[in-house]
Length: 144
Image 1 (cartoon, rainbow, N blue to C red):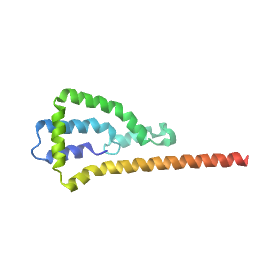
Image 2 (spheres, one colour; image 1 turned 180 degrees about the vertical axis):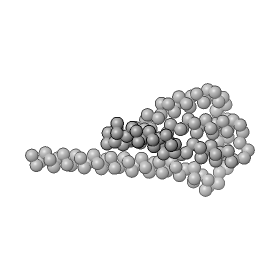
Image 3 (cartoon, rainbow, N blue to C red; image 1 turned 90 degrees about the vertical axis):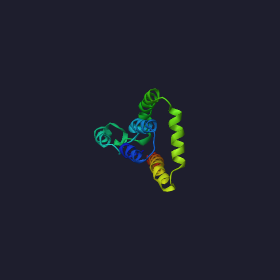
Image 4 (tube, helix red, strand yellow; image 1 turned 180 degrees about the horizontal axis):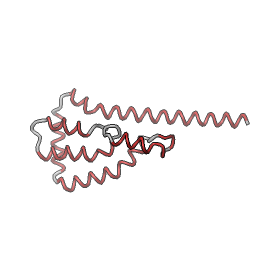
């Protein structure tokens, strides 16, 4: 949903974070790397190569998400096993999030809102396109 390099860079600017929290931040960025499309240069290149192998020559966001979830879960497990005290990371994150300025919280939530709006728009366009195809099919059947 967001750029991993930007996330880790912004996290490095926060003072007072423990080494464990820094590890969790980088682990989260690496783990979520498979869930980004535009944020990383190989993804647009991969899209350019692969798009013709998909229906309508587009890579659908929900299909991309479904394909990215299994390797992301493997990465989560790998970092969780090697990371150790996961609950402490969560507690530190909650304390940090509670201390956030409202403007910073807005900036963190904005990519999720944009992604949600994009997925909703995609769903509505697909629904409308399917209804249009059904209507055309019915018109063709009536004409014959």
